Image (tube, rainbow, N blue to C red; front, side, top):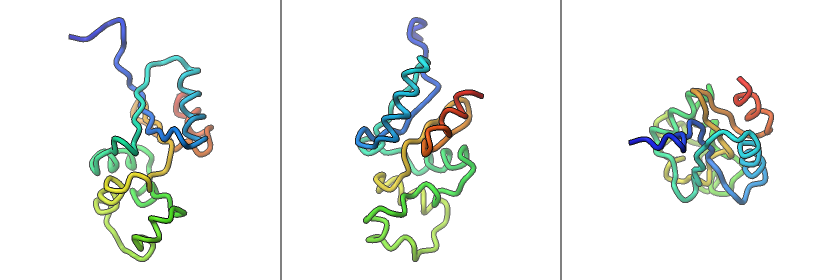
Length: 125
């Protein structure tokens, strides 16, 4: 039975509290006052299927969700591999520290919060 006093959040933020950009996006959501769900993706990684959906909403390939400057990216030799979208999603699900951050999903849209204006744009639609 739904709790009508606490609406179900339709907005999600894939959040890393150690990241200043992620903290800024969280503050923006709090400022707006609409309900949202915080997903600490390092502790509770999205599945490969979720990552494919997020990439689709962002209008990018799953490979573009990867933080290419991360040491782990180089250690895994990802720059030299030709992976399918599903393979990329599986790698990111297994190694969530490689996922760009923050990601905000709302109303069938998504944005990577670098810069924060990307998040403002999907919230203002």
